[in-house]
Length: 609
Image 1 (cartoon, helix red, strand yellow):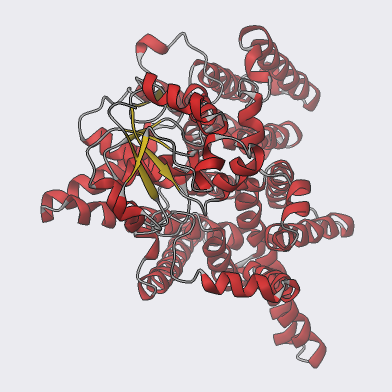
Image 2 (cartoon, one colour):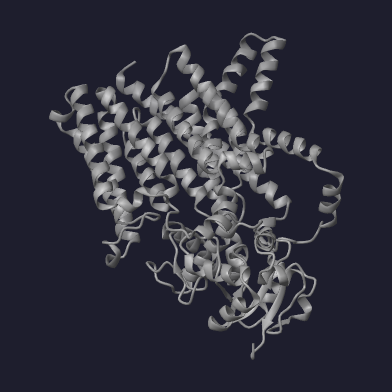
């Protein structure tokens, strides 16, 4: 067989595997959509308290209504004039395109938004599944494909970021991160893959700074592989660096206005991230391309070390503010009452004290996957793909220890070694069938499915609940005590647009379901607006009245069953909100009759108030 013939066979095999993986991902996506369709797509009318998904929809509406591409103000939230959000237009654009296309065809904006809320997460789910399956195939051979499809579908469904209505940016960040990993695993056989890996790494960083640890980890892995294996990694390092730097430059030009090129924003893609990305990418590409810097291992290590020193010096000297905590500028009161009570911002240790049953659901499968990789390292035979998967998984796990939101990445990445583990026991059960091998294979399947851990933890937690708790929950069936459903805001939407004084958990729903504006929303850049609302709700009735008068508040919205309302009432039992929850209505407020006893009670500020 000639070399050319062998290459053609290899290329045909690669195309066939891509087609097979695409079909499996499509089947998984259709299954996920069927489950949600059978349930009636509940997230389209009840966001489940996810403020970010609703505010993303508001941003898309604003963009389509004519708000400037570079204008990231949220004018209806915060103090007068609003505040500037830190999100990227790179996510708004495709969602807006779907809404625009469907509304042009159907003439219905409501239908178009519903289609976008289903189609966008489903598309990202399909793409993520493709890259999970591709990575598992490369990591554990063809036998890992079926386990990756089953376990991956269950994992992505469990983490919830691909459910209908999930317009927040975490799903596209996860997809791009796994895509970058997948392309790196393919880079030795397919030359363009390294360039595509750098492209994906740059895009996920541009979407949001939450992925900076993963992007840095991928970049360091590429650099270290190049340092210790120049023959196989030189072109990969060069192309990855060029892709990373080039796309970062394009993103900077496309999303940052010229007037802001000199402004450093630590929580969004700006001059800081562009300068670091450009230096890191071009520096890596230059070191890999220049013979003098890459001739020996020692020179490569010294050159890469100097590049790291330069990057550190630039960050330290030009952008020292970005070395502080990402929430350093947040008012201490907001840290206590807002940040400390955002579910996805909890640490492992805080989660252990507040909801121990969630630990198994969030950390079990990543831990099992890390143990499997550690055993592989101990036994020898460590491979290039083991290094890439292991380092990225460990980084994701460490991030999840700091903030539970990192578990969305660690759970998804854990699918890759777990699929290879299942494949190993499937082969043993087929080649040497016995009761023991079949039981081990079944155990591997069960241990690898994240939802089984979640179900077991939930059942154990429910078994420990008291009868009174169960009765109380049953009594609330059919209600919306936390004010999360669209129907709950119907009465508010019918009232003339004004400024509404409400807790931060109601901020995004009020914007999404009505034309009103609010002060508070759970966003760290909205310091001034959140403090206004908190001062009014936690302060005295006189203080609330003064704020309402000075800032032209027209309505006060009360949701007694929302955890934030209960926290405020507990924190300030003599405050305005606590008194209102006890039924004490001040003379300057007029209850709106048809909302009395509803989940969301409304009070109109009297004209002479």
